[in-house]
Length: 162
Image 1 (cartoon, helix red, strand yellow):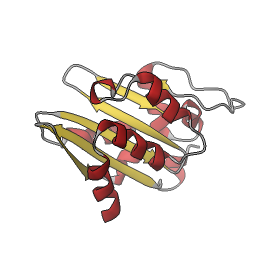
Image 2 (tube, helix red, strand yellow):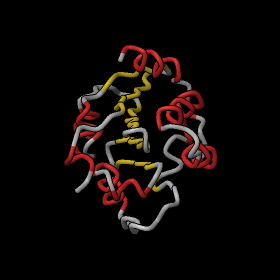
Image 3 (cartoon, helix red, strand yellow):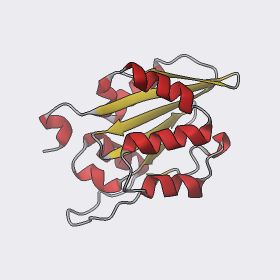
Image 4 (cartoon, one colour):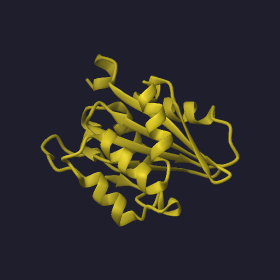
């Protein structure tokens, strides 16, 4: 039985929107932490002509970055092994068509599009290093990502409200 089926999940779900060169962040419904479909539904509610990112910090264990566009959805999961315990991580691997790791896999590795934020100033190799930093909590990793992409202040304001 996965975590989402047993209890609610701690963490946060944030939408980061870049429109006319400015970033704004807002909180998504906590259901976005449980299933990828719920996260996508929440992100589709955000009306903008600019880029939209979903930033999910799940249960102090891993993070997910979601970038929907009209033609596709780009995804990054910071720890593929999280799919063993969390529905949303399993959903991401399903969409990416990546098999779920085995029960004895204890390594941390990311799956998905490491170039997801390259056009915002965060190249794939740097994003991979952030995702692989196991000494950091997911919220700290996402704050590093926000800093590199230019929306750390907007993210901080939303997180301070919660």
